[in-house]
Image: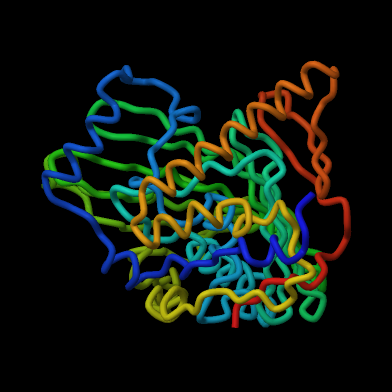
Amino acid sequence: MVTEAKVESRAVLTLPLCLEGAAEAQHGGPNLLQRILSLFKNVRPGSDLTRFQLPPVFNMPKSHLQCLGESVYCIGDDMLKKCVNGKTSLERFTAVVGWSISTLRPLIFGVAPFNPILGETHHVSADTLHVLMEQISHHPPVSALHATDEKDNIEIIWCQHPAPKFYGTKVEAVVHGKKELKLLNYGETYVMESPKLLIRFFPVPGIDWVGDITIRCEESGLQADLCFRTKSFLGFGGSYRSVTGKIFDSSSLKTFYDLNGHWDSTITVKDSEEGNVTVIYNAKEAISRFNTPTVKDPKGLWASESAVVWGEVNQGILNKDWEKAREAKKGIEERERELLRERKAKGETWVAKHFTVSHTKEGGWECSPIHKWVPPAPIALL
């Protein structure tokens, strides 16, 4: 049995991913690239990487569940407040587009977060926004997120299923699942997709978000079509981390704004009639200068909390004690396999604690939160 004292002592939280942090921590050079490619020497092009196990030297000290949560609760410029304060449906929709782009964070080439264990949770509060996540499937990896703000009447529901595949010179991860932002005061629900994550090894190593996505609001009929681009394979064509698109009425097809910029700097919209240009997203203001979350209520920590589950591994990585990190990670993986064998022997099916899980006809995943409001968390971002 895990005691409260043991749970508290095992919790290790680290600085959230941010704009300047990602730049400072970028890894490059032939040694790192050679080590990465050596991992894939027995992997065929097109292979599914969801079961691929990285040694701790290639892990950042946090799980994917924490990275997903940080994209919602770590925000310097209060983008959600702008969504609520919009006076018209078009103003609110434009602010939602900016917020959606803000959830994309620069990642670090050469390292990846842990694949969360089944039932792992991450529960954090940032002011009046309370965020709760749960890993509802391990193979395939599926994460569920529920965030609420009772003060501003906001709800976010996000079911994410990344599917990374290896293609020789790159890894491409299609991010399945939908993200919903509900502005309850206006009865508006915004549904948005996620671009693909591209990790390129040659000719210049790097990470970028790419592909076409849509953001739409059924109640207002507004829609945004966005295109995320990166440089071509040889680095001549395209624009690194660029975003282009338009905001329009899905019924009349009338365009209100043309959108342009870069998701790691600024995004602007240009009024289609008057030509006025407005900045709707500034990455330097939105995803910079974060503090490390703090455990405010040690007794409220669950044993399933990400910072507890991976605490020993995190400490090993931070101390560069790779043997300790490796042994701790191996212990977590072996325990997961043991629990799976026990469930199979008893004929039991694992059931999520905080979400109702269903499958779509297309083979996707959907999740619905069990509770209407997320309670204040034992971990807070100050």
